[in-house]
Length: 242
Length: 218
Length: 53
Image 1 (tube, rainbow over the protein chains, first blue to last red):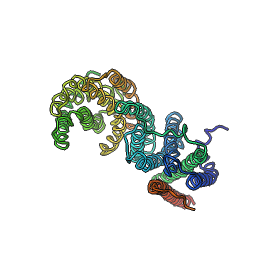
Image 2: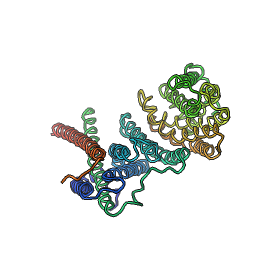
Image 3: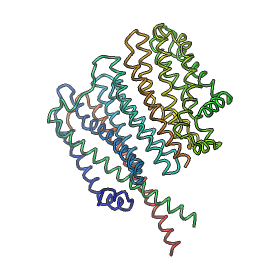
Image 4: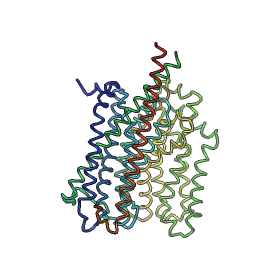
């Protein structure tokens, strides 16, 4: 019994169908617990006031957005190497979720930056990278939509995902270089892991788990939708032939 | 291989438009920006490196879909796929042809447009050098985007959406070289990184482009 | 029960609001697509069975 068993759409549907209610329920529970804890039960920060509460959305969304891209990359590689359709469809299913999380991270960042930095937007390396990241997501989704043949689309988006990953990484370092070239050592970013005390840390971890579970649940639903659509299309194609 | 290069160059020149269009667009950018920003020399000189690089990048973008589209439509791409020349080589040659008719003229025209934008005198050399080193990457990356979208009808806009994020590192390092050169600062690091991106893209991306072409011809 | 958000109420509530909106949009889109795919598949399978039988 190996993990590749689930590359079979039927087996994947059976397993995901059984797991999905649990994942979705757990995601809802964790998110609710983490956000309620973070929103109602944590004190204000002495410097940031009540804006610390934004961290419970901002950081989990950002990390889930990056993980979503990693999932897409791995799924694309599996599709290109082993030609399992489920894998390609998981990559396709993950993209809109990743884009939404990227947007959430950007918007909540703007809401936080407005009172804290006095500006909605700053060309800080991290912000810039996330904006570029959102563009990568947009291009990837647009390519899926534009190509009609599903296998061709899967191949092309797979290649784009791999090349895009390399360039996204290059952009990351390029942007770091570009901004440091402008203002030496001016760091606006807040490094959560380093200076956040336990009071904020525990609900934050719960929220991160909640966002990851939410991502998993959404990807499962979307992948199941894709498999159903593919099957319906195959049946209709057979009808036309008959 | 040389035959393919010569054929592509001849087609590009003869088909009209394709050859001069990018240059004309580049000129227009250099004219429109001062009209929009205002004629103050200080402001223009400051943003000139960025404008020239963004302009070159956009002009390059204009002709990208021609790299494969015409050959795809009339079937010569299928012929290329069955010819002894590996697809990777064909893609590289086509990217080179694209660079010769867009990137190279843009590079040569850039100093003239630099005058229009009050580029500081110390920047001209680095402008030409950075474009010379950076524009091949634009053509190679663009060929990859064109290979992805060759089967899509009216794929021009999609092509831009796919290619522009991939241009980010080249743009950043290229403009940085000119900016630093104009300010008389040290330029070795961005120049080396720019060259590294071009070399890496030219060496590796043809494989990805060829894979995409094969998928599209299936 | 509502915590006192002080002068940052707009930023905090705005963040939570926009996030809720975006997530709700994604969820609705996902569920609508799911319902459509289910219906399409059920229809196609029903037709197949009729044709077979």
